[in-house]
Amino acid sequence: MPQPQPQPQESLDAVSLLDDLIPLRGASHTDVLEYSVEVPYRYAECYALLQDGRKVGLMEPRKFVGWSSHSPSRTLLFRVNGSHLELDVEEELAGHAPGKIHNIILQAMALRCANTMKKFIGIDGDLLLHPA
Image 1 (cartoon, one colour):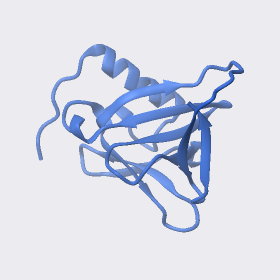
Image 2 (cartoon, helix red, strand yellow; image 1 turned 90 degrees about the vertical axis):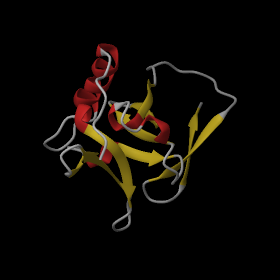
Image 3 (tube, helix red, strand yellow; image 1 turned 60 degrees about the vertical axis):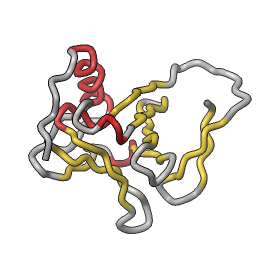
């Protein structure tokens, strides 16, 4: 398995913010190699695969709302304090960014009118529309 490359401080600060917003059970987002989505029963769950080989879930699994596709490059959607948080993960970033995270998008607490919608797969398998 390739060793992760050193990360710029700004990248680590952004990823460590996830430890406050969507903490992992017994781990830090800075140690994540990749995120996975599994549907063990009726509802999907988000897991983090760590550098030490462990697979951990979220401290609060209900914060995971859905995902954009089953492909390795996708967007994971979370609900944090009434706002949405999106993690864009890209397969090409393996070994170069914690969890292959390309973007972290936190929805502002403002009303907005959007003409476009993003589609996600809800944790229960239903289609979930979110303003772009």
